[in-house]
Length: 350
Image (cartoon, rainbow, N blue to C red):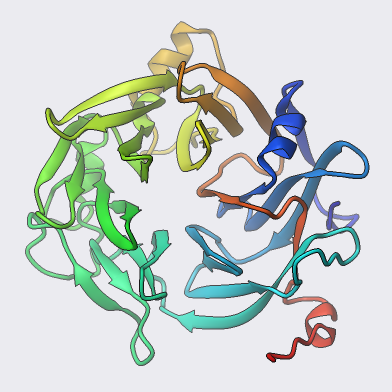
């Protein structure tokens, strides 16, 4: 299923031979955000046609996403939306087995919100990149700061270390990634090649350093995984030694990481030619393989480190930010803000 105006630039998705069958076996789908193109994509497996199911909606600069039961939160330019699946178990609507309807919006201002997660109390927490801290949704203010790294002396709207990644563990923020550990406005840009760190939120200790633009820390099955994006690496952090252990090389700028069983699903982007991405080790590694950077998904088998499946995105989308799994929802859709659907879809709490 797709929802694209006829006048929209073309979006093409290509897959490895077994990607669709693998996705069907997971029993769920994958949501992608791309702030570069202002889109949220749902990628699933159509049970009727045995083909890829793609649904697209436009939001203003979508970034981090989080899912908890029926709720789906998406950070945009200056607000965080909460969508709720309006369908019950076994229900469908126009071929979709989930319909995410907007129910709430928190106006945060332009905080450059990156990763998000649901805490045990149901509240949203997020990487507040502009203020170099972890923030929480507030009912009365733009946000409530709940933690900052010890190397940041005070809260200021200066994006000092580019704190971008947030790993949740047992319903609480557990680890963050930052591109640098500077305490001066925009100082992270000088640390892009090897200044990246992973920080333990509980102890405020740096548990891994020497990374190149790390992103998307995730706790999965008792291990901490992270993307060493500037080198095109997916790997794990040995918390005892502090070493980063590469698992797979990725032919693109990696952002967005989710899991389905013993598979990691990783988002890739084609880096822009600007001062944020220039001069990174990733480009040298791509040149050595005579490869161009790719945009799409890589599915890595955690048991072997092999890329088992892939999805390539061509056309209007060249960068991804977040990737999350939607368990139990094979072919989801979403109500947008610019059509009459939002006026007609009404649900009743019983």
